[in-house]
Length: 120
Image (cartoon, rainbow, N blue to C red; front, side, top):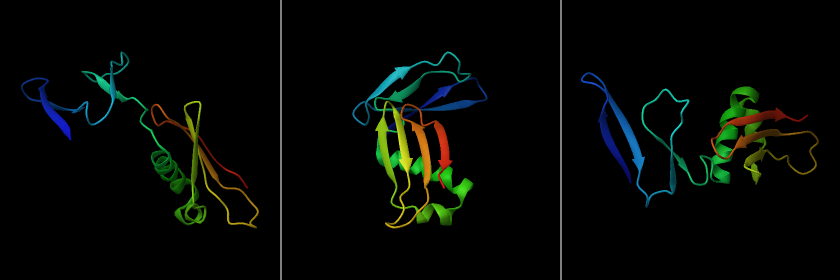
C-alpha cells in the first residue's frame, strides 16, 4: 500500500508526493542537492534494480529499439548476474549455434544503463 499526500506548492499548483510506507519497503530518506524538484526522494535499500527480473526487464526495454524485437526474442532465456553493484544481463544461444548475444550493464542503485552491446 502506498500513501499519497497532496502538498501545496502555491495557490494554483499542486504536487503529488508518493511516500512508501515502512512496512511496504525498506527505504532511506535522501535529499539531492542538485535536484530542481522540491522535497525529498527515497532510495530503496537494495537500489532501484533489486533483483534479476527487474534487470532483465530494463535490458530488454533497451535492446528492442536497437536490435529489434524478433532478434531479442530469439535470445531467450536471458540471464542476469550482479557484481559490484552492476547487473550484467545477457541473452543465450541455442546449443550448437555460433555467434553472440545482446549484453547490457545496469547500475543496481539507480537503474542507469551503463553499456549495451551485441556480440557477433
